Each structure stands twice: as C-alpha cells, then as structure tokens.
Image (tube, rainbow, N blue to C red; front, top):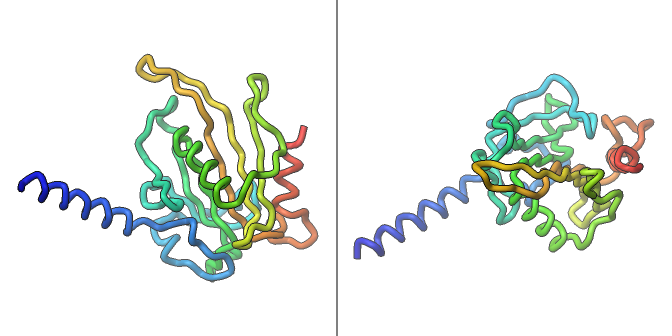
Length: 201
C-alpha cells in the first residue's frame, strides 16, 4: 500500500512539474508573450544570428519542446558552458514575439530535437554536414506550416568525462517568423539567407 501511495505521489509531482514548464512547441509569433519572458534577462545588444532584440535565460529546465525537457545539469567538458533559451522580439517595449531559440550543449537533447523536428516537419534542407575534418553542420526548414523558418546548427563534439567517452552534437536551433529580414530591416537579406550564406563553404 505504501508503495502505491509513493508511486501516486511521484506521478502527481511529475505531472505538476511538467505542467509548470513553458512548452516552446506551441509558441506563436506576432503576439506579445510576457509569460514566456517573465523569468528571462533583457539584453541590451542584438542577437547575432537574427539581429533582433532578445531576452535569454540559462534556466532551461523551466522550458520544454513538446515531450523534450531540458536539463541544467548534464555531463559537460567545460562547466561554464551552458545551455540557453532565448526569445526574439520586434522591440522591447511591446515584446511582440518574432521567434525564439534553443541552444543545448546536452548531446542527448540535441539528438532528441533533431528527431522531433524530422517527425514534425520532414527531412530538412542540408547546407553542410559535419565530418571528421569539419565539425559544423547546417540545416533548415523554410516557411513551415506554423509560420516559421527553422535554422539548425550543430557542432560535432567528442570528450571524456570520468573516463567515459561522450560523442554527439551541440545544437543551436532558431524558430523565426518566416521571411523575416535580418534585424527586421527590409533592405537586409532574410535571416534564413544570412544563415545559409554563413554555412556554405
């Protein structure tokens, strides 16, 4: 009986815990989302990949993407390198959402994100794939059914922690309103075009 009660309490805790997380997979662009940025830090510079104002946080365990939860604590080569979630906005007065990004240094999360995106959107367009000589990869999905251009950058990693070899990818993943121009300036190339150019060899 005690075991049944314990299992019930743990299940309830897990349900409540997951319900309190913000699910990035249901984010909509073009609307203010103060709840999403509530516990983030307002940045004074512009986000480099998109040129947009943004907010960010390293408390990634407050978020999830569909069924994928993010961990703050995971095996890593350099302790000061952290996963990050960020929200791109049209401006920081109204906080109208232009997109968001997920940067994960967790190799398992990277694998899960790629699988989830392929399942939802199909195979991505390939700009470049990582090799033993060149560890960088670039992929994208253009104008998805939910209104995003999705940019996915991966970096191949191999390191040893506690005599255990770790292999996989770190990932930077951007969801930006389809057709958005870099820095929201119409005379600039689109964020997607800029991303493609940067990854082409």
